[in-house]
Image (tube, rainbow, N blue to C red; front, side, top):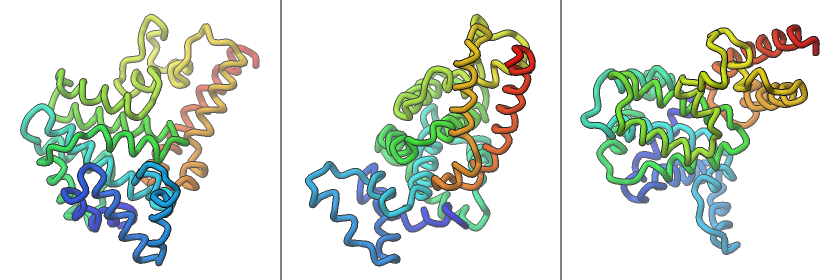
Length: 260
């Protein structure tokens, strides 16, 4: 079951602990199993603000933060414009690759999140903090949420507002929004869908030095080995392999064109 299996134990805390309950429940469950319960007292003893995302990170459970937050965000997104449709649920399962063995537990959390009045924004903020060193993965999450929103038809105003608020909480830049939305501004980008500049999220006016810096940054953010070492779920590591191949191909084309 991997990281998805861990959220089954976390669902019990969803209503008890408010918007952070599920993450707290999962983190505490891990702490109890590993004998590290004492470590959760440190944020309180040091006089710092209580932050369950940071706490779960200290316990080495960023995967739990990921699993819980994306499930809640997907459920809230599906519900934001009316009753949840089967096509939206199927899109959630496909985009986040829910294993059959975890389907029941994930479904319970999805249903609880759908029916809860808790705000979704703290979950997006949790995800951003837990993975603040991996903007590429956060962009993939936003892209997946767009796909879920479109599963039952074109984006409507409520879905777009929901996604815009998630985007702001994730702390991503405008280029990330444009790529996730699927509409890179044509005033800045050529119309060729196979344009290497579009793949790197830059324009043809970008200098060679800036292009090289962008390529290096994208490689750092998306390299599979780096993502795996940071606790990114395997499904997203696999997608990153494909993205790295596209980034390198685009950079090679630009280097040949410019003689870099």
